Image (cartoon, rainbow, N blue to C red):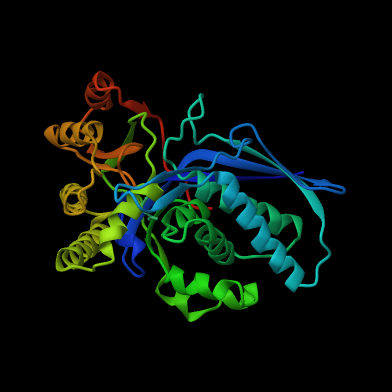
Length: 356
Ligand code: MEV
């Protein structure tokens, strides 16, 4: 049996901007995991998962009353990852084999509600890693990351892949995405190996950040699962107009994230100021697009953090899921967690998943 675990992730800064190729975001991999166990089988391959077993695919009409947005199941990503790796296996002239995959996730609560820690990315990364070992393909972490991103954009074309990078590389990272539309357009015609070497990847970077000096990360879960695909769809509906306000959002987000990268291991007060700035930028983007990135609970979490001298932000697309707080030693965990509980926000005991 081959068993592979992939960590969940949290966004720290740069959300939405990172959807545009070459614009940076900061993420952390966290010590909650999704595990894939692969066993050889004869005849037929199966995917087993107590959580995703029924493969729910939900869809809804968006506010414009016209577009349909599909909320994919993590099983869609499993299928895409298997299809891509089997293509690579065949291109290398290796004999096809059968296998069963058993998926177990620690990225949901006991009743199966997602924390928003990137289950889809973690399952894609874990399946690709498991098949890499099974077929002895010898893929490097960067190759596995690129394959996982190509599989991801077959399911969710707009996804930046920041969560895929965090889940593959671990630690704190600064990430910029490639041009996924171009890669997707090429992906059916080119051999997989050629696709992984395309110049479209040149703007895609993964920079490791040092230890976060003088601050610790606290995470509060709102208990309301958010739909990233729905939020990204809404923001990008109007994004297509590429207006001046959006260009300004991108420039300001880039400047704040690059300054954060610079201050990360050395200047905690600057990091706090910049995180507060990133919160304001996201809030402004939401208003601009007539949508709510910061729900009432997330606003409460961030306001309480700021009132105590820390900094808080929605993590990821917002609309629910988790908020993150970076706090200096003088702010006690209990002071924050006590406030959160009064507003039904659950503190999650999460720590950094160190680089592999
Ligand atoms: C969602 O977790 C983060 C976004 O930037 C979307 C993405 O990066 O794919 C909003």
